[in-house]
Image (tube, rainbow, N blue to C red; front, side, top):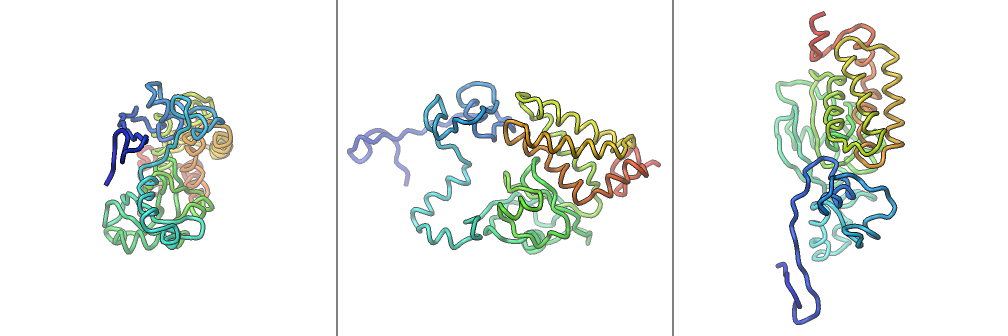
Length: 286
């Protein structure tokens, strides 16, 4: 049971809760941009330090986390830290909720212990790939996550393991793709979203991601060159290193991971002017 109000249990402790509707922009998933939004300003990230725990909402120390994180607190208090630490891996404790979607038979929200393998989620919980198609990749972490190829199906899903193979936990999205998907077109699709959601505050994110998108558009239109692949990689690394907030720092992830694991498809687009999946209409007619 939750208690709110003034002088709770005849003490001087007051506890009030105020619910505010945020700006709704993707960038407001970044903590300081969310604080700006709550204060009635445009949702843009602040340069850190100071961090919210020192100077957050209206300049006061602020705790800011996802609802999923806060939801664990009561269970830890009730059951103890040892109970919670018994779930998950050595460095990633507890469970994680994923929005499982894409080319998988069972679509929906799933909650699994940290360390559950991607194969278990896709084939045991998700029921496998529809129509007997082969697994090609899974994109984790939302629009800024990376693509995990077939050779990493047995990777445990935890923060460290995902980072090592070029992806991230992020918002808990898990999109499964079968062997009919074009990975160049997929990288373009996710970058289109992050370009449109950039707040525009810093140059690397505002302009750099736009230049990356233009290159991907050329590749998908059959106008790309091998030099474009080199430019993509250089831009991606520089944007990661120099963007102010997590949106810009993670925006290149879909491009970097698809280049790493599916480079041959990029080369086919720029050298042979072919799309093996026939998704890129400009080349499917060739």
